[in-house]
Image: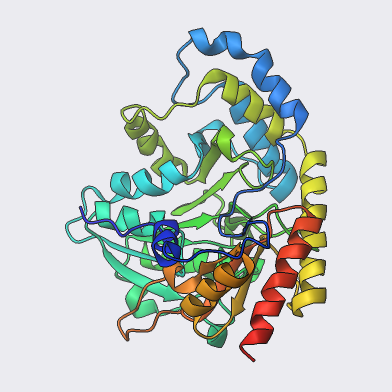
Length: 381
């Protein structure tokens, strides 16, 4: 298998011969990892259950975790799932990599479509399954929303959306998601929405693809799946707690597959995760910090406050040169957008010219870094 280097590896290579300005403390705004302490009650639940390390965990997840996740979906999205319609997972990266391998194993010439720019695991899964890839380009021309080409979608076995979107911050309405559900049924492809940023919203809650399925009368969630995680919502990426939910027929067979791959979460982590999924107060506090960061960015950079995520997606011209200059002169690291996207059939890379800035620090550190970015932007005007 020939896997593309990760964006952060490419960034390291880009900056390796540059000495940053030591007059500034380092500011790293490249990775979507919240730089806040995991709430105390989650940590306490973890330590209170360390005695459970003597037991093997179930691949299917403990009842306490499954119920917490189903309750979250019910309260947050108004969608009531039964136990056959959800599987707790070890975060979502492993699902995004191994689910396509499960789903496409028997396909002679599998085809995957996914949004471009994208989370690189989508591409890794396509490589592992030898699938043909159709890129759903997200650009300013289409308001960073995937355009519908039914001729291409009719060829697909799996379509992966990611809304709220990393890195463009774009969102889809309930009706727009509903149109994608209809397409999945019409052309009989599996539609999966990566919803890991659904809880990091600024004004109003974001809809789920599960809601959209009910909205268009797909009551059994046929061909419809979502994944979600507490990494962003609970500042707990190291807890590795996620889920995949939706079509029970698909998930029943996928559960059999999962018993072989050894990705069951340790029991203390499951109990801590159940506590995190069951609480909304700490999530609201985190959202308030991200909202403040966006207000600071609007004041300093003049950027629009997005509906969701904690990213800025800014056009800077030559993003590679800007990234190098920003690091050299101001000791700030950002991620060039072209590292998060690929050229399509027309040699168009929709990430080219953009940088992604992760606003994952506290407001004071965020303000300081954004002032430096503003100064760097002013230099090239």
